[in-house]
Amino acid sequence: MLGRIDRASQLRILAIGALLMVSALLFAVFPLTGTSKREVFSGLPHNYTYREAEGPGGVQLHMLSLNPEDVILRRAGLPLRQIAAYGINGGFFYGDDLLSIAIMNDQPVNSEARSYGSGWFNAKYARGTLVWDGAAGVLSVQVAASGGDLAVSDRSNYWAQGGISMNLQHEELWEAAANAEHLPYEGERRLRSGLVYDQSGKLWLLVTNSLCTAAEFRAAVQVTVPGEGREGIFLDGDGSSQMNADEAVLTGDSRPVVQMIAVAGGK
Image 1 (cartoon, rainbow, N blue to C red):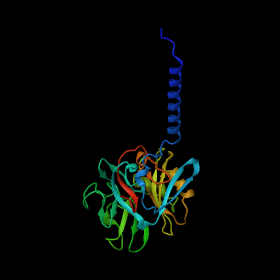
Image 2 (image 1 turned 90 degrees about the horizontal axis):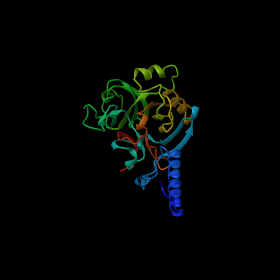
Image 3 (image 1 turned 60 degrees about the horizontal axis):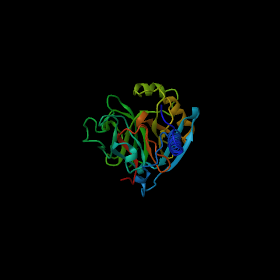
Image 4 (image 1 turned 120 degrees about the vertical axis):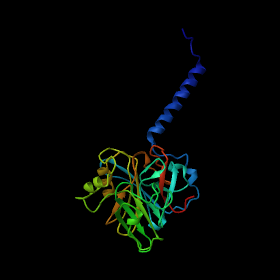
């Protein structure tokens, strides 16, 4: 038979239990938002505006709006919260290979131009690619298989981010186009991310920390993202859906991602 527990031991057990309960509550309230690494962002230029909104079905969108000339497509190789830059995850990847176009001024971000996994190709399929033509000052979504397919004014002054076409202006087309471009897990409830622009030239980097289908995410974009004439692309999702901002750090499942859409001024 166990002996009696003295008063001091009882108090210690109660204190430990209370601490564990508080920790569990904090994790439940903030499952995807981290604050312990925010010090890595100290002193970075704040070249974006943050917005948070709730769409149909409770889809919670976190958004960074900025000018397209303030975007840097860069290699990551880590969970985003470990990188001293604001921004969100980029395109699809497998291992260390980047499977979506990610090009700055005709140079893919992950390796040599025209090599597999470099960011020069949308692997296997022609897919929706958001292009900033810096010389013309124009944003567009182009369906492309490689950097060589992109229509730009100056090959030394543009960036291109691959994903899957949202077709926000074509309700009758979007689902068939997403299927043709092989959008992963379209009908499953997953974390999602995207890149959207409007006719004024404002760019929006989007991440949700609520599970949703592709259709639910797209509907939330249509309701909550400001601006007229919007168009955009789906980016990688699920545990790769991550965001660094002063206002919210969304960690997905904390997996390393190969590529990042960063706000200029990071380290």
